[in-house]
Length: 499
Ligand code: FRU
Image (cartoon, rainbow, N blue to C red; front, side, top):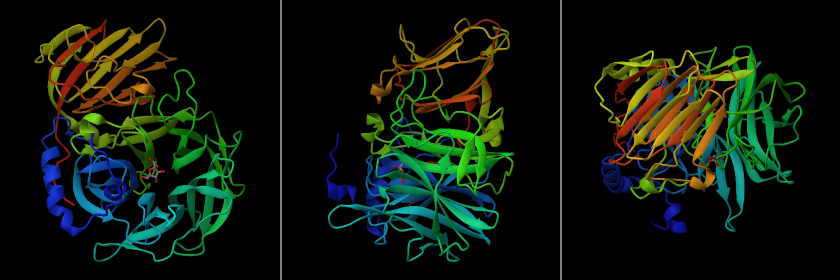
C-alpha cells in the first residue's frame, strides 16, 4: 500500500497534471469495481456530496475530491450534472484551493440559487504556518463566463467560543432572510449547531446563536454536514454527529448520519423534534448526506449521501488509485413523524431486461440458472410476511452477501462476513433491523461494488460497499409465497475523463 507524504497530499490540481491523471483514469476505468449507475470519482478520492441543486434545467452535484490518489489529501470540488437524477455526466473541476482562506482545502458546503445565479457556500480550511487550522465560511458563484468566482472575503470568520472545528455551511433563505447553519464543536468538545443570518448574501452576516434542539444538550463531540429542509409541512434536520456510541442495532458505523423530524422555531433558535433522532441508513457505508435545494420538487427533498465514511479505507480500490461513490438519489417524504426514503422516481428507468421472475414462490421465468449477475435490480414482495433468504455472490458453502428475514423474531439481517474481500470489518460485518410491522418488500440495487436495499418501500435503507470476486458467482434464494423479479440494469454513468 502506498504511503503518502505530506507534500504529496497537499498537491493542487494544475493543467500540467492532465497527462498523469488521464493515465490514472485509464487504468482505473479497467477496474471490475467501476460502477454502471452510481456517481463515482473520476480519479483519486471522493467524499461528501456538496452544492446539490437544480439549476438551469439540470441537477448539479459537486463532490469533495482529491484528484491524485485514494487518500484524504487537499480537497477540491468536482462537478457532475444530470437531467433526470439517473444519467450523470462528468463536468470537471469546479473549485480548488487558491485563496489564503482555503489554502488547505475547499471543504463541504451547499448551493443556493438566487436571481438566476448559482451560489456555493463552503468552508475554507485554512492552516497557518504553525499548522493550526482556521475555518472560514466562503461564498462562490458561477459567473457569466462559466467560471467559479470566489468572494475575496469570508462571510464568517473564526469564532472565539468554538474550537477549530466549525464547518459545512448550509445556506438557505427563509422569510426573506438568508441563513447559514453550521456544524461545530464547542470548547467542551461537544457537537453543536450554529445559526447565522443576513439581509444580504455577500455581507452583513451575524451570529444568531446556537440552534438548540429541544431535549438535547449536544450531539457527540462534533456535528458535521448539517442540513435543514422543509418536507411537506414538516422540518427535517439532518446531520452527521461524530462520537455516538453504538446501541444494539443502532449507530454501528464509525460515524453515523441521523435526522429529526419536527418544527423549526427561527425566533427562539430552537428545533422542536417530534420524536427521537433516527439513522438515515442502517447499513455499513453512508455519511454526510445532503439534500438538493428544493427548486424542482417542492414537496419532497432529494437526498444523496457519501457511499462511505470518514476514516474507512477500501483497500481493494485504494490500490487501484480510486475511492468513493455517491449513493443513489433518494426522494424523501414524511409519514408518521419519520422519513420515508424512496429511490428517485426516474430510477425505474434503470431497469433493463427481466432475468428472473417468481410469483407466489414459484418460478415463472429464469435466465440466470443460479448464476449471480454483477449488476441487478431485484424487487421482492412478501405479502404474507414469510421468512426469506437471499444469498448474493455466494459460492459453495459460503453465503456471500446474505439477506435474511426471520418472521418469528421479525429480524431482517444483512451479513457481509462471508465475502472474500472485506473492508472496515472492525465496525461489524452484519446489521440487524427489527421490523415492527414485518417484512413487506425489498428493493435491491446492485452495482459492481455496491448494494443498496430499500426496505418496505423506504422505511429503512441499507447501503454497503462490497467487492465480490469472479468466483463468488452464485445466487441462492428462498421464501414461501414471495414474488421476486430480477432485472438487468442500464448504464447511466459514463466513466469519462474530464478534469
Ligand atoms: C465530512 C467532512 C466534512 C468536511 C469534509 C472535508 O466527511 O469531514 O465535515 O467539510 O469532510 O473533506
